[in-house]
Image 1 (cartoon, one colour):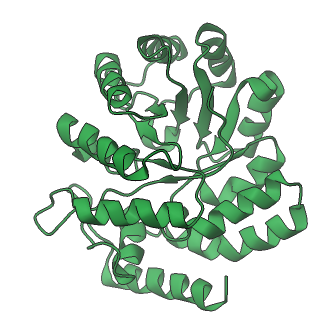
Image 2 (cartoon, helix red, strand yellow):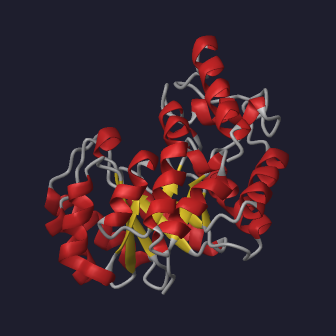
Length: 297
């Protein structure tokens, strides 16, 4: 099974002025990520604005990222949905276009019980039984919080569930998952600012927003922590904290796209109901990113 260690970028989906997927910009993003030494790429997660993509666009973006990466790094396709049949369909199609793993978010809006979330994950995992599956728990967005005992039940029933993106904002949750499951399940931080603390409690890396802008630096923090160089990891992580914070000054991925647009990598467009950050927020994003960059990081 796939081993997940380090920083994996929750890739933004670039749009042109007509809000179509910008294929050329997508290629540039993938190339920049790989050149920066990132451990892997996650297209079509929350940061990729997956709720605003229709199914063909969704699989199209994943397919383009797979093709551009060309096996240089693992690609984990975001294929979650609040409808289990839809998540199964997206996951199967992602496997067909060559992903190394799929990531399924807990069903949003429906507010399923723990038993419902377990069943959802088991059904998706069974439908792609030869492909690794990453669970994604982000109750701040979904209103559904997958508890450790439910994760344990899923792992017992589904051998191809290999990891969880844990985005509760609670380091204790990472600690409990590691206590229960040890090396059976790879824990990845879902919050950039908590990466170091979660790795100290057993996480193996992060699925990152900040690494859209600074892939090398986010990956370096993870590599230092994995090597047990905690003092160096802490210094590198703390230097990045202002950037992590400003990436969420407004709704993600607006700030990340603003930073990438200021650097000339993409045009700064998001799809409704999101809007790009205000002028004041954009100015703050650019100032913080430039300050970090000019500090020789």
